Structures are given as structure tokens and as C-alpha cells.
Image (cartoon, rainbow, N blue to C red; front, side, top):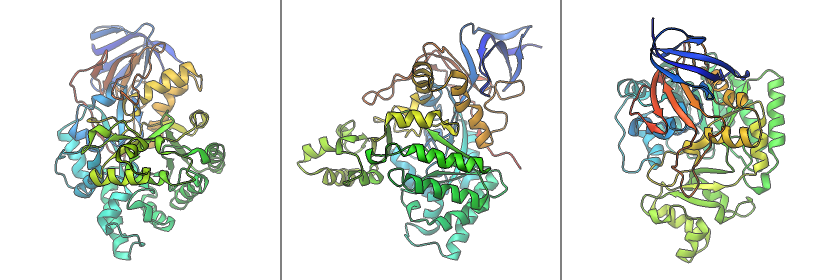
Length: 489
């Protein structure tokens, strides 16, 4: 019986962290049919001599919730080797739909996503209008809280908590992978630890995890890690630390201690992971970033650069102090003026230390997630499309933070295991055929902050569920992605 595709003599990294082997890999339908020496006919033979063949990259931290419907080819991800995106991070979930759009529309000004009902409805949209990559979903605490009680800063009343639990229950029934929080954003920042424990405890025994954009990633980093670990222990569910870092010069170096807290928790038997993007700059909405303009944060107004401002695109790519000079006011006044003109403004924040980035990346708890904001109309952070190529090219090949086998593991098998993605993240017979073919010697990120939408080089081919979606830097137009519902436990 013939196969659809056979990659011949590839350097295969199977996603487990093991050293590469030279092998043929056969694809039949949406699955990997055979790994080894493959004989017999195929619809297409690919000479992969000298090229690495790996599982498709799993971007564990994205904000592509609505992009999967509004930019369904998802070329900005698949051209960088990504075959699966986890959405619903930082407390910003996809349902209830109208409330979710209040939090998500800043990334897609002027757009209108499809109507749907709840998380089940979101999955139905993905089933009916498939995207170009697979989509795994987290429920967002911030969206759920906003639906149940608006922006009230108080603790939820018993009826409000019951409403939140009902919304989360629908999400779990639909197949989400966990619950996320965004404890620096409205309205998540008003939640107490007890509130989060009570809600997260609804996930006990489901296989879901707790992913958190913590309360403070600056000088309060250690307290924030401790709170996340406390919530995970109390609810008896795994913990995922979102974009692990130390923000602001006054906090640099704290990652040594935050990693030690994770080590202690893991040694005690707690399941804890983190994700990281490979840059010293982050990105978020300006309304949440204005706190970094206060004295003592270790950041300067020049560190905040406007990424998207639909009402005033001439400000995109310019720092807050440059805008302040234009407006003849101080930086905090300038930020306020920008928000009046465009409340959905996003920024890039140059806030981290390179040594900290390498330290976190090398730690065994860390997997890779872009945290990219899909503001394709503006100047998004380069991490949106270039994260995985940058890890492979810059941090693995050039700096030697880890070898290629370990880098691939952090992007594939480790991620699939942490999020419960069955038959993903491995090159083995029977697994789904999500694959990336690339040149280890040349793969590298190309995007810059000034030109952030340039795609990586060195990636030859990307396959999602057995279908080629990208070849030699060109998207094929195929959309074979699926909504990845959590497997029953």
C-alpha cells in the first residue's frame, strides 16, 4: 500500500529529547504511518538528506483566539513552523463570545468575528471553518469574571461564584485544556487567592491545568510564584507559569530564586511548568503597561514602544518618550493621551535582562511560547512569527543554551505532554502527522522590531494533520487544522 508522502533519509528528532536518527518517515492520511526504512510507492517522495524532521512546533502561549477565525490560514504561525496554538491565555478566553470580544478586539480593530455560543460553539466554528493550524483552548478567568460580575473590585457573591463555576463547567464539558488567569489585567487583578482556588478546584480530576499570567513579574515575582504554586496545590492541578521572566531592572536576577521555588515544588511532587519567549522585550496593552512609567520600576519611557494604534498609526514604532516630546508633555500624560485617542493601543516593552532569559530557557521546567499579539495591521512584537526559529538558530545553534534535540523537545513533546495533547508532539508511527522540515545550519529568525512581520528562513516544509501548509516560505492555502478538545479522563 502506498503512502501520501515519504521523507527520505531525514535527520529525525522525535520530540522526546533523544538524539536524532537518520530515517525515512511515511505519512498516510493524517497520521505518521512508518518511521525507519520505508519501501514501496508514495504519492510524493521528498529527499530530506541533511535536513531535520521534527514534530510540528506547539506554541503553548498565544493570543490567536480570534485570529484563528479572522485570519484562518494562520500563515503568520505556520510559516514559522507552528502547527498547534494554545489560545485563551492571560485570562482572556474565547467565551462567552461577546464578553470575550471586549477583551480581544484590541488585536483586531474593525473586524467582526463569527457568532457562536460558548466554548462548544467556538469549537463548532473551528470544525466548520478549519484554520491552518490546530487550536487548543484554555478558559479565561478574566472573561468569565467579567461576564459574571463586570469589573467589580469586590469578591464574588455566592450567586456570582456560582455563575463563574457554571461558565467554567461548560468550558470543561466542551473540551478546554485548562483555566488561565491574567492577574495584572481588568478584571482578573481584583481576584483573591481564595477566589482562584475555589474556581480552579472545579478542575480537580479533569486533567486540566492552571496557567497564570501572575500578579507581579517585577520585584514581587517570588510572591507571585508562591501564589501560583499555592493555587495549584490547593486545587490539585498542574501549574503553568506564563512567560516566566523578571520585569524591570530592579527585578533582574530574581529568576534564580523563582526557579528555585519551582525546583522545590517539583521535588515535592507538584506538577509545574513554565513557558518563555526568546526575547528581552515583552508586549501587552498600553493600559496595563502604564504602571511601568511610575518611578522605581526599573524602566524608562523610552523602553515602551507603541506596537499598534489604529487611530494614530504614525505613532506605531515610536517610544512613549518620543510621543511625549511630540505632544510637549511628560510621558505619563503622553500615555494617557494615547489611550484617550486609542484605548486598544498595544506596546512592546524592553524590560528584561539577557542573562535572565538564558537562565530561564535552560531550566528543565521551561517550554516555548510566543505570547505574540496578532496585530497584523501594525508593528507587532517579532515573537509573533519568529519565536521558534530564534530558539533553534540563536539560542541553540549559536549560543548553545541547549542542543537541537532538547530545543525540539521544549517545543513539541514536552508541550504536548504538559497540555494533554494526545498523539501530538512526537515523530512516531500512529501519531498525527504534524511535521516541520528545516535546515539546522541555517534556520533563524529574521524579524526585527522595526520590521516585525518578516518570516524566518531555513524552514523547508510544514505539515498539519498530513497536509502540507507551507513549502519553501510560501503558504499553500491549505487549512487542515482542528480544534483540539481535551481527551476524556
